[in-house]
Image 1 (cartoon, rainbow, N blue to C red):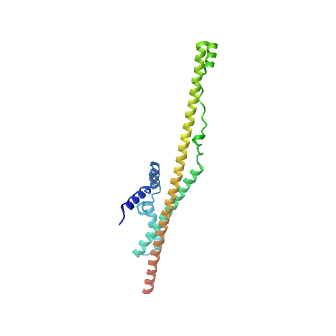
Image 2 (cartoon, rainbow, N blue to C red):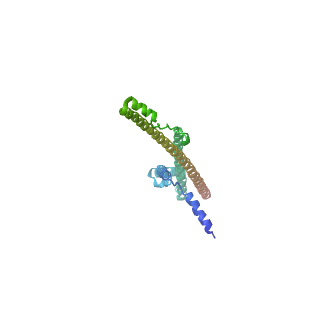
Image 3 (cartoon, helix red, strand yellow):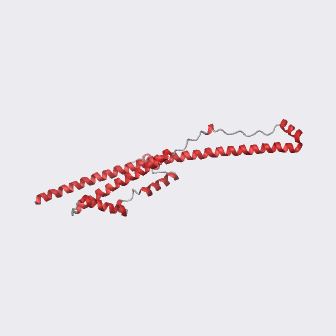
Length: 221
C-alpha cells in the first residue's frame, strides 16, 4: 500500500512536471499546439483525410479484403503522421536557428554599469564669487546652471537604467524562447518515435495479412 509520504512526493513531482507554468510558456505551448495540430488525428483534418484515403488505396493495391483495407489505412495514417512531425520539426528548427542568429548582446552586469555622477551644489566660495560679479542675478544664474546640469545628469542616469532593464528583459525573453524551442524539438522527437513505431506495427500487420491472403489463394489454386 502506498504510504502518505510517497503520495505527497508523487503529487509534488506531478506539479513540477505538468507542462509549462509561466504565462509565456503556456502561451507558447498553446501556439505550438494550434500551429502544428499534431494532437489532432489525421482523419479529423479534411485535407489530410483525403490524402490518407488516396495513400491507403495505393497501399492496399486494389485489395477488396476489408482487413487489408483497414490495415492499409493504419499504415497510411502513421506515414502521414511521420511526415507531419518532420515538417513541424523543420519549422521549429528554422525558428531556433533564426533566434540564435538574432541573439541579443548580453547585458552588462549591474555592478559594472557606468553611471554619471550628480553635480555637487555650488560651494560657498563659488556663491560668493557669483554674488561679487553679479549680485542676486549672478547667484540665480549659478543655481540655474546647477539645476540644469542636475536635471540632465538625472535623466541620463534614468535612461541608462531603463536601457539596462530592457536589455535584461530581452536576454530573459530570448533565453526563454530558446528553452521553449528546444523543449518543442524534444516533444516532436517523441511524437516521431511514436509515429514510426505505429507505422512499423501497421506494416507488420499488413504484411501478415497479405501473407495469409497469398497463402489462402495458393491453397485454393
